[in-house]
Amino acid sequence: MPEKIIILDFGSQYTQLIARRVRELNVYCEIHPFHHLPEFDNTVKGVILSGSPYSVRQDDAPQIDFVMLQERFPILAVCYGAQYIAQKSGGEVKASSTREYGRANLGFIDSENPLMKKISSDSQVWMSHADTIASVPDSFQIIASTENVHVAAYQVKNTNVYGIQFHPEVTHSIDGKQLLENFLVDICACSQDWTPDAFIETTINGLKEQLQNDKVVLGLSGGVDSSVAAILLHKAIGKNLHCIFVDNGLLRKGEFEQVLESYKHMGLNVRGVDSKERFLSQLAGIKDPELKRKAIGRVFIEVFDDAAHEVQDVKWLGQGTIYPDVIESVSVKGPSATIKSHHNVGGLPDFMKLKVVEPLNTLFKDEVRRVGKALGIDASILGRHPFPGPGLAIRILDDVTPEKVAILQEADAIYINNLKSSGWYDKVWQAGAIFLPVQSVGVMGDERTYEHVICLRAVGSVDGMTADWSHLPYELLGKISNEIINNVKGINRVVYDISSKPPATIEWE
Image: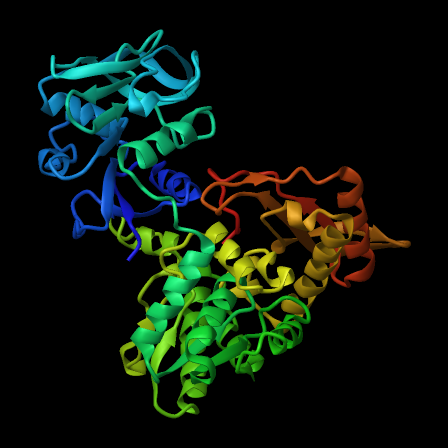
């Protein structure tokens, strides 16, 4: 087992970002809700306490026995965590007289302190809190201050307990990565040996031990996650992995054939299943996006189960579940009532009676790509944009018909091909065309038309948690619009979505 850092989540919007920054320093870490503590075995090297939307002054504020933790591990307490330890140790936390949000500069730094080593004087940090630590007990040593925040950082004397009121994990904190490295390497003595190659070796060995000679079925989608999961399983159990790629009639244009062709060169045992008519018949007349998802999920399980039964003595279902899906399912707030159906973890029906194996459930999306690159997977697969599980069904904001799917596939193909030929595809996190449930008046030749509208969506992001709309050149947008309107019968208007996430989502449904 690799050494690890435990991050205890009090509900902060930045908790996943802390984990990402720790892993960028080649240190493995796990996020756990503060009220569901993990086993603290001898692989744990330190603990990070996250921020929180709560105030430590609230009666229902999250509580934790940090004394028990500090007796065993170094602690870095961020924002709420820092205020909590200060208050519980006899300090005072009160509502700030000035709103402490945004950029600030560390006017005072104790550069001799191990946490503040190599932090530049006047270093910019990011504040995000309404409360502030007004005073600390004599057992605390202040190690950093800003103009407005006297206790910007502290150490509990003669211990490895540190608290900071700013957020080192955000890029606005210029020396945040250095501070985290100081904590991880100098204070926790982490060896920084968690790399893609180390992950691959450990995972393959673990899969061999777990699966032995058992057979595994895995549903391939053509995307990054399922492809990397498949290769890891293939390297562990070879021909005992049986991959199934289902054509639900809602894929991109020509995708079924292209994906099957790409997998031929990877040595995988893949079977393609054409179920277009079965899916589309079950979607007839359904407009509600959640009902679409449920229908697609139900039919997929039926189709997949039929295909899986053709493999004798299967005992495992392989899945490409990644870490954000796991975190969301066991978050501080509990499983969200608004999690989309196709994102739920553990949705396997009882009748399949298969055990689940998830080789990627500790990785973020960018880590999956790095592992895939180390495995030698083709860049065309690793660079593919994310694509929704229900496919084009949730990019048709109306009932789904074969005619609408065909229109959207043609428009989407023109859009994506232009992004690739212009060099913009790899600069964009995700792009796709949306079929809108409106028609508009147009003029083609000497005739008035009343036809459909296509919306183009392109966003930049790191992991899909937040996203900004991509500023595609006007000339490129004009070329795409012109090609779609001239070549896709049924479309006479193209628009571009300039909404960011939040408040909008990447997909429309």
